Length: 595
Image: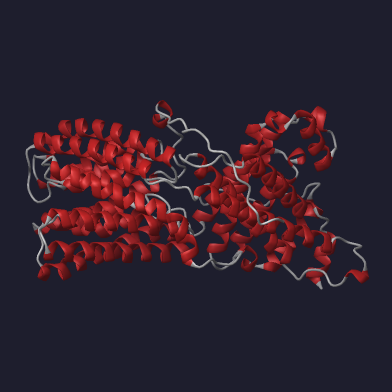
């Protein structure tokens, strides 16, 4: 394998979508969980402060309460650790903001510190892959704290209040585990089964049953050569999506810790999803969807009945269960290796947030941190997604200020009405944001405006004007900064990902050859228990990373043409090798495991 990387000609600027950015998606299958969690996590501290007559301290309690928005897709063992880190990270950000605010009142310095914090939030949340809502909540709270009047002596008390609310948010996030301890793993497995069923359907559309016969993988490759790969782009996308869902399911199961009976049953279902990816012609998608449906609620995990692939499946399961969690771990990279590719995004965030804040100050807006937060919310994995997020943010905020204008008379009836309106918008934001970011922003905007009134009611017209100006400033200046700070390293990351896939594929292929029955006594000892399973996990992770890296780079400007053909060939070869690891004969594996 040559280490030389080919040079590619430059490509023109990519088109930026407009109407597509506002298209509504299907709601998340757990949209109500973060929505209810944030209402409970925010409501109890705020109502307590309301009863004590100290609603002016709600900003600090919300710093901890909003941590309940994170880690809802993680198994509870991993969720507990992730939420603890989120709370600690929030406390660190708020501490820096409060100390800075107590030491200086210079808006220029405060904006600079806010921009640096926003860049740090972007880098750390992307590096740790904490997931939605990403860095925005951290930046929103820390930026608001920077512009809150503060003395150094008040900082410990405000941090203690945030810590107490954070502990409550941790409990709220973990409480569902008392009722449904394997809920996240069940949902991840159901997604894998549904995605595998979608791939089987897409495969059948490209290769009808009457044509494919019993040709097997070799026949499929031949037919692909005759038709051309372009005949089934939906089939390729469905396979990549299914592989990602299966990989995510394994990661969820491996992060769950102990392996009780329900988790072992889930593992067998994920193996069935992998078998579907390896042999779609022999898979019934309706059966996969039935198992996925049965995973809802608290019903027992479905047990797949024996079928014609039972012997093959048994071998895979025996090796998987014998290998244990270590089979899914492909080795951890140093954090500095993951941070390098994120530096352009962090620089975009720092520059865009700082410029947005300073332009807002120059225009005389009293809350420049709104422009800073708007800019911070734009930055996604590439420039095209950043543009889409900007469109969504502007539309959502403009509609949101109209909603605030309608609700303000009701909220101004008293502090209790103010708190209840905020809770309603908290729920609405989380319930709607999975449909599209702009729809969630329709509720986020009035919620943020109402939070600014916890210290006292204000004239709605001034708030609306400031918010509209800051939204437009943050969106325009933030996007200009994203265009100015290029990410030319995105293409290099594809080359690195291609190399990783090729190494993982070759390693898995060698293990397949060494494990075949009849390799001969002179061929040396076969791989150890779990070696092939570990190689399969590494290859699957590499393929998922390659697809994510390619998708991210495809939306960047000012870079050379991407090696799309090499990516396609690498993905096809990698998926064929993954299929071979599942299709291998199982009886010898069973004998080795029993021995």
